[in-house]
Length: 464
Image (cartoon, rainbow, N blue to C red; front, side, top):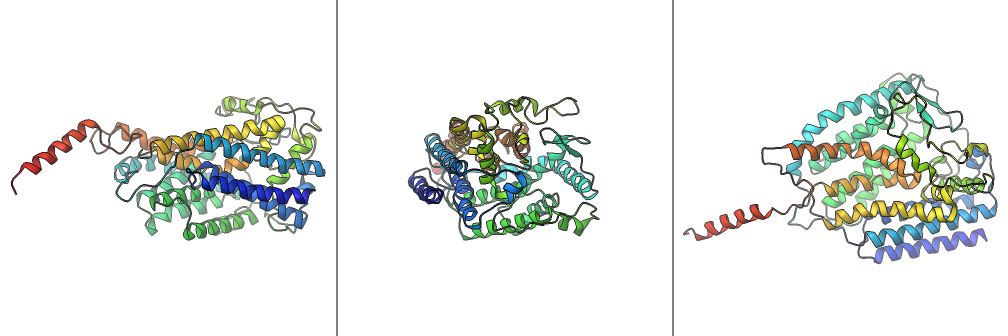
């Protein structure tokens, strides 16, 4: 029965892709496109591999074994999430977001150079100091964070979380620099440096985010609605870089530049293809179904959203700050060892309220991303709004896997900060080269338009 369900799930996925492709809003810029990629890889393709190779690594680490009913519930729940996401996102984001036409510059780069050159010297040193500090902490074998013994959430002890994560601002700065310089070969140097620096920390998500944002802007700049061969090649290179970092958590990169005394990462388990924990959202979802509510006797009832109120407060100012959500109806570690678990969007919904939770959680995410998509589509000539949306859309490569709006908010604080400063500097500019309508369309205002028409009429009246 499970094998038939996997086949049916694959056929349903093809049908969902067909429905999306035939919609007038279909393009790589739509949040549904990224959700289809996420769902197809983690809940269609990988489950088939898991069945063929009989994946057991996560079951061994987490110390649980799902029943066949649990496994079937996961496949059905993932497809329910797909239905809800596609429906809601296409209902809200139903307007095409099309690249600029040949004669129209939708994002005038020339007007952004001045505020960018004011922004970069402010944020770049902070980001570099953050990543250098992180390299030193990891290489010394003395990281500035501990794991809470009850919730197993990592807590910063000798540093402030804002400073630790400040390195993320380097990603949008590098991407915006490449876009502002019209993707000349040398414009990718800051991005390459960021990828190396971030990979040296063992973190993969931020440089995957940066590559995704870069590809979106490059495709937009080339007036293409779908990836081409060069885009696919860059994705393949990113995947290779991801795999290299996974093998030793960045140790080999750090050793090129500094002395590394961290504990060597050893791979003792003989993984089958894609069996490692970086893509194990299927098993993570199975663990949630295994626990909630069968063994826990309760759901979380969206109490995790209360973390929005506690997350911004630094632990240095709140000694008893809760690790993670301030209210919990259960502890998942009472039933196994779910270390490093990322529940995925439908999995997080199940944790909150079962089948209804999947509907609510996926609908919230779909509405959130689609709302900003619609703003960008309706005001496609906006100078900064499209940039804002692309930097937000790139977070889906992480947020769909994490399944948490807290994760989106945490990332966006740093990923959108350079753009926020660029906008503020634009508003503050009094020289006239940059107008205060930074988020308005590129069409001139009525007064300016009248002056232009008058000038053109005067020129036409002059004798030849």
